[in-house]
Each structure stands twice: as structure tokens, then as C-alpha cells.
Image (cartoon, rainbow, N blue to C red; front, side, top):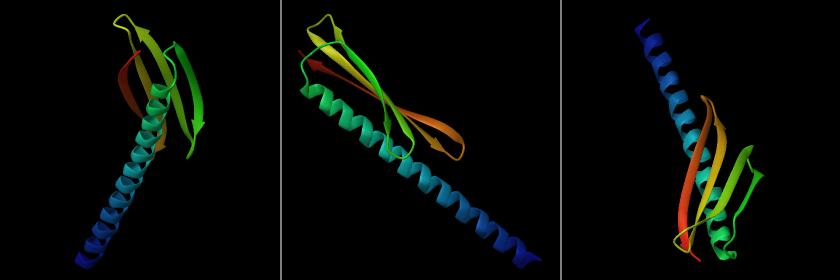
Length: 98
């Protein structure tokens, strides 16, 4: 019986490690998508703009570029992704001079 409990604990630990690894991979992909959008938006002329897109791995992206009073713009990108526990979201913001 003690051996069975030990094996069960080992299997449960393995499942947690796999789930955490999958969540880390999904978060890393979401951050990469958001960074790419911020870099692309920073290269474009300053203007108010917004949009959304389907991203790989069933992710959803929403972005916005807004002019702000100090001759700059704020660019925001959020990427929503699914994990075993539900949905998570990564939000990145940056400002650039116009």
C-alpha cells in the first residue's frame, strides 16, 4: 500500500510539472506575439488606431495606439490565451515619441 501511495504521488507530481510547462510555453508565446505587435506599431506613423486579430495556438490579440498630449503615443497590446485552468491574458504597454 505504501508503494502504491508513493507511485500515485509521483504521477500527480508529473502531471503538475507538465501543466506548468504548458502554461509557461503558452505565456511565452503570448508575450512574443505582443512584443512583435508593439515593435511593428512603433515603426508606423503616429496615429490613433486599434484592432484585433486571431493569433496562433487559439490566441486572441487586441491592440491600440493612442496619441497622448506630450507629442507621443501609447501602444497597448493584450493577448488572451487558454490554459487548463481557464483563460489568461498578457498586456504590454509602451510609449514612443511622435
